[in-house]
View 1 (spheres, helix red, strand yellow):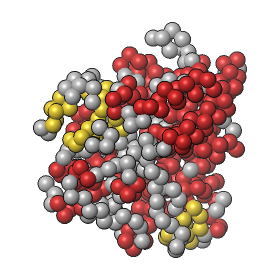
View 2 (cartoon, one colour):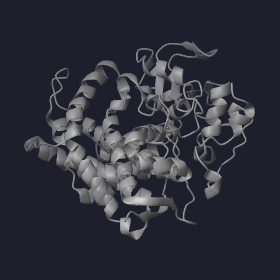
View 3 (cartoon, rainbow, N blue to C red):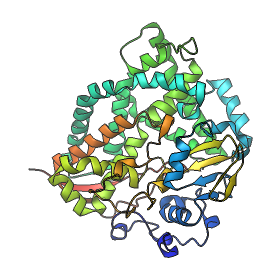
Length: 445
């Protein structure tokens, strides 16, 4: 068991102090002092994770009512057991922090648009398997392989738009547009609309993050309605005139178990959560975090650019492990269960913190270190595990690969732009996303 001092120290890889990054030390005396709904803890959650890993591997969050589970092996067992730990946790209303808003929001969707049906990540059993099969067909490995030349070309073209400048906001100029361009191409959505889509996905993510006051949440709902009215004519056109896009497949493929194609409510649910958020946010946040880690770890940068073929795969997995874009998701206990001496009642919601499990020293030696020689780096839980393992993981890995391949191919040196970064993340209970990252670099001659 790590010492209490170890639990309090900052666990981010690299030399954050050198770059005046915030919250390098957080003093927490007891697990119940942790509040994941505060921006301070979210900016640097790693001391909190370490404390929970050491002293409270199953912890009932007094703010949310969630049972927070942090250890790697526990998460693996939970993820592999959908019978005991269901994924349709949103049906459990007793833990909703803003239950008074639910009926109001539903009425707005009913009056102005379509009530989004449960997403792929919110389904279980016979409701999940046919739906997932539809996505597996649309995002099968063969299609990703055929897409790879386009992903590569897009990464280099986007990078070359600013490489001569010697500086950029890596988040806004590359990490955001790159995966959005790729997913728009798959879905048949015009590339020039990516920033409209980004505004809609940001609004969706903020609502999902559970930290909005009511006025802001209602704004997010209005933004989602705007997206619905953008996509609805697209659905109607593709029903009449199918094409070879992924979206056309999703719209027109009949689900045998249901005897029908997806309806509008289901399509609107999948467009935001399963397609544009799921198809871009993980990649964006990993690409942003990866450059931050490279600059913090100059020895890693030197090794990576010297021999990218040897180190690139492990580097990508270490980025996904250390700075998990999805910090944690949820399960519902189907039956009462005891874990580490804590009784989790039937119907309780578990918050399974992937980012904590990814730094569990029981699984990963020197867990806070970015290690290009790590043999089990790819066993992280960033993409989940079991029947709900992220379908977009192969696509995300290819996008992340070509991002950093373009980086090492195009530049010699890289650093933070002096005085321009505060290294802040968007406040969100579930996701970890840098707001901006200003960098400077020297172009290869």
